[in-house]
Length: 59
Image 1 (cartoon, helix red, strand yellow):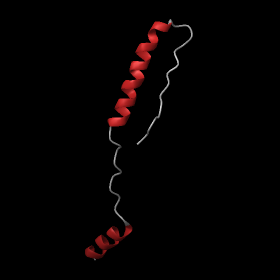
Image 2 (spheres, rainbow, N blue to C red):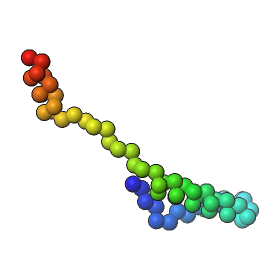
Image 3 (tube, rainbow, N blue to C red):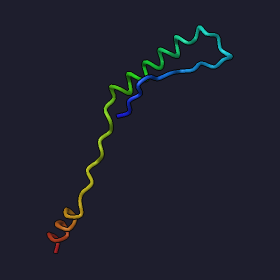
Image 4 (tube, rainbow, N blue to C red):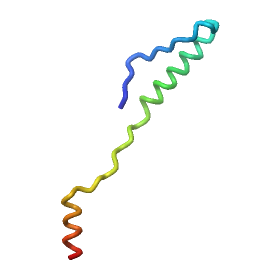
């Protein structure tokens, strides 16, 4: 799981400062989403022993 200790958002200098609250809110929402979303589990990859046993059954 990716953990971001403190996510900082730097607004563009051309924009007025009153939009910083929206950026902060978006950053907090993203942080919460990343924190609560479970990591994707690796799919099961059969071992070589599994394949050898399968081939042995066929013969």
